[in-house]
Image 1 (tube, rainbow, N blue to C red):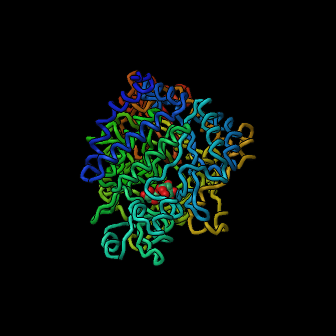
Image 2 (image 1 turned 60 degrees about the vertical axis):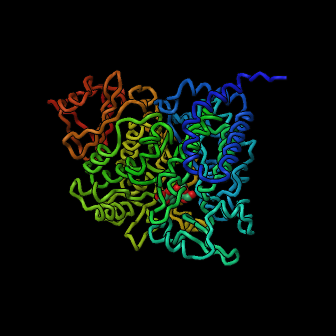
Image 3 (image 1 turned 90 degrees about the horizontal axis):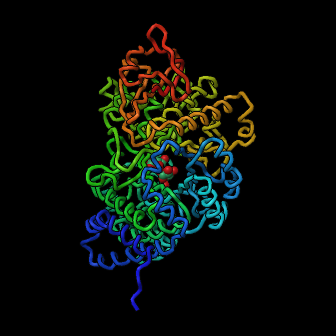
Length: 619
Ligand code: GLC
Ligand code: GLC
């Protein structure tokens, strides 16, 4: 009997045909020369078909809906919130109990930080995963996870989870088999019989954690191997030159997609491909792999988008959003690290020239089928990704400026408002990264009123830039640093825990009454997200253009919407500034209406007065 294809089968075949051109040329270039390529290709097709067959009906409907509304993640209604489950409210059940709080803030996208089963003991905050198919038992079960994903979907919120692609925990089943000597699984990792090649590689590699995990390889005498471990000793880098790894990860991706994940945050992607004589970061093959992974999602779980985590310099970051031949085909989202770094740089110097230069020169005015994840703080440290060339372009020494920023935010520079902590000082390169919560880096301990304004300016900036603004848990309440990590043995070596506090629920409960800085920050942030939602000009697809105003204290950009221009103005100083009305009008703000406060702006004697840390969305 001949089986007639169902509508479901046809949808799969159409999606496969759509994305085949994005997928197979990448795979052929990466793996085509191998003898096992045809078998790999057949297995991959089988995996994709199975992923689709297993996909629940409501998610298949969501796939269709997003095919019809491909800009869903670029709309101004999107606003993200990022947290560790245990620090937020203990467990997944605890997350369910607090969805009203998130809705009150205006959140429509929730990033549950690493929630898959990690190794025990130090797991790098969960980024050392031993089982990609199980939920961390401390948080609940897979059924709890699915309950959260369904509850979010019912509220119109998207769910983002981490997928660690560069490494697994050394306790992962694959790693354990490799350690026992199974050659199939040894080929999943990068293992060497002697230190010769590792030493050669080391000549051009950088160290991510020089303090506590120096070098990029670990020698295991009991296994008789040197293993590639870019991050911590317990995080073994995967060998992406082996198509079996590609296949395994696609299975995991579809498994997570079918549990209702909307956004896969692909962790530390820059490091996925190794090449002798290079830093082994952002090699061309990384982009081929990421385009191929993206195509797999488009075929078998079209509702899912990819957020690529590459915390690198501007020129190196953009390709993660698909440049050149990958245009529109790679990450839908990537972190806007430069915007974050430049926010802190301008805040310290009270001068936006470097910020204006970097953001105007290196970033295009629009992206295809992609946008930024904008943020001011996250769970990681801040590295001063300012190049010598960019610094020189505005008359600064790159080295001196980076050092200044470290001293300023560590809290040692005379007169600084910030209270941060150093992270991974690299004696060799002089590199000093910084930890600290948004509030503490913004001066909550030294001047709470100004700190409140700085935080709200930061939130208004990322809400208007274009992309999905991500609010890191606690920053909506100006939570300060938490020194408690120093007494936790598996955290004490890692100052990033200073800005991973526990949620302060009593403070949160008081958010609508109190006049404290935290209540003001909550209500201000909520208002920013509400105004963003109502402001069509902030759709991420509308071009953005950074513009000089002639006033070094002010940062300005235009959002060029078909309905008119929105001019974002931000005063990076604690002094009043005055912008000639004529400049604002020339830059397209013809009505002089502030879409953020919802009020008209009345110039005096031809000047627009901007209070300390003002943020204005002028139309
Ligand atoms: C990512 C995470 C970071 C982690 C690293 C290693 O960059 O954001 O927290 O340490 O990957 O997995
Ligand atoms: C570096 C890496 C980034 C990682 C971070 C950990 O910035 O590039 O991927 O998350 O270190 O703090």
